Length: 599
Image (cartoon, rainbow, N blue to C red):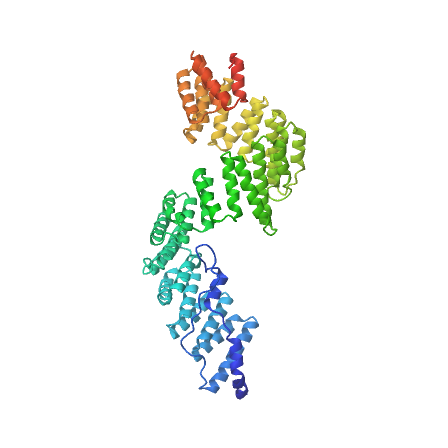
């Protein structure tokens, strides 16, 4: 029997010891990565220096064969702990590095990290020069959240790796330590391990980026910014550092932007230039965004998204023909792409933008036709609401309301949005009484939503129900005493009716404490001061409000105060400016009619 086992040993051992390397465990845990995504290839495997089983002892080999067989069979039958113990015993007796590795993997597969650590430490002690054993040790220490103990194996791995492997390891560290309970502790351990690498010309930029990412996760934005600065100082073309700077900008750190000029002046990743353009667009820095998008369309004329952003920029700047041309280019590129949900969503964005262009050109029918192309997906409800608004502006209010009501919904929130949209159509059409009733249906679906209740209060006031408006506003304030919109609206409502003016002033003052300098609340305070007979104080407040925010309603109040002070020429000038801003403003119209003024 021993002879038979010995004769088949090479085949059996080969079959049972076809073991994977640590990078497989890393990959399963999602810890290998680069500045912008996963690394496609695992870390290179290192062969252990000691030979596998020697043929010097046939009896021992046969015994070992049997132990290996029992280990694998026991594990397959569900007794992982016994299988692991047998394999570890075999590894210790045979001094075979592959069996140490197998014991470690058996423990990891059975989710027993503590048992894996015992096997890995034994492996490490037997083969102190083994990079595989050291990397297993690093992985399991981090997995067990014994972060402070992971510094030494990390230093050993970096010291033994060539430049390419070192870069892969360094870039993997933020993901490796992602589950550490102390993010700042993990950052300190990694920083200590990377000290020797931070000024290395080939490795330093990546080391600083890794350190920056870990500092950012730990909440240290200043430290992350400093690491980004160091990385770009070593290599201004480092993509990972630029990505980190963009992340800091997105988090509100304006200091990161100054670091990016050399990067974007070189040959940046198109994806990062696109991200930068989006951030600039969101910040309404249209000229800066335009510069980045122009560069992107030159560098990557086949990138569809660049043309969509180009169209958006041109639309915002009023260059409608250029916006349309960019959209047409975007559509051409997208049509060549294979059908997918992402492609359909992108086409929907194009149709929405085409509708905006047509609307700005005054072609409401064409705008509505573009929106009619959207017949499913997440944008369906918003598209139908916009279609309904366009129909209402063409005098087709009934058709608009029917369109909204016929739009299918999946959630209660969508149902609420439908009622809100219909109420808005009625408000714009001046049907305030019915708008108030429809808004009530939305409120019934979300009775704790103060914003919905506030809108209903405003509709009640427009519908000639000031007492109901007051009741609704007071209910909001009772629930949320610092709701500045409700405080301001109730104070203005009382002031406009000439009732309880002292209370009105108190309410508006409380609102202004919540939103210092707000021009519309300042306008309300000016109006209540006027009602109290404090005309000079009212004039001062209203002039301040109008300078901050030129608005037709503020102009109406400012003009009336000037008129009452006998400064008729200045009053007419204020009203004319208000009329220029919005000739349809109800407050301005009512003021001019009441005072018998013709402009």
